[in-house]
Length: 111
Length: 117
Image (tube, rainbow over all chains, first blue to last red; front, side, top):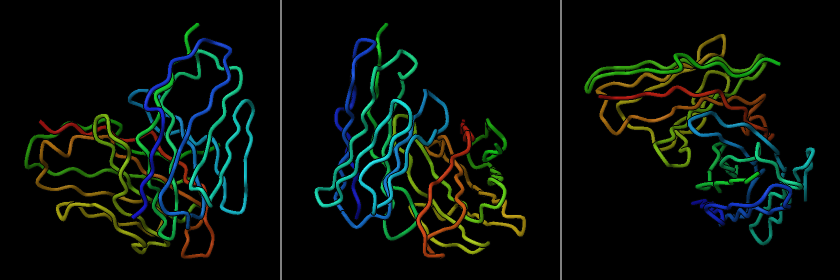
């Protein structure tokens, strides 16, 4: 059974700082890994998807990497802004189609 | 760009009542997924459909049922509602499922917030 863990559970940083969010998964036989952003009480916004054959994906100030062999993914956010404050979720998709989510990292970027 | 549409956005029901949640996937997406997110919890997979057939099933209570229709929209029917069913219910769609031999990005709708009193 796939289990996804995210560390840290919460993170508070000053504006402008670069930061890394960590995601680990127990079953390395994944098809892809997807990072989401969720604002309080709102829906899930897909940020990046990394397929199993890829090592990283970039979108603007976001960079996500994937190391299947070690069961890890990281989301790097450059030059953080207060508008980046949200909960960030990673989710692994394996042999079945469902996404298995981590519990998220709650990020606060202070002006 | 068109997104996943869910209706209603908010729903308040009494215990033991029934509820129907609707999901309209992105055009040309033939796979639909349902997830439940309880307060302070991560989303949990309920059920998925590919080309109108159930493709996977997760921790969906027997009181719940779902189907995908010929126009690819999906409905989640919930009966004998309990207080613990209060949650945010997400629908997601993707262009094709693993049954078609590919993995794909899932796009989520805004969710339906169900409150059971």
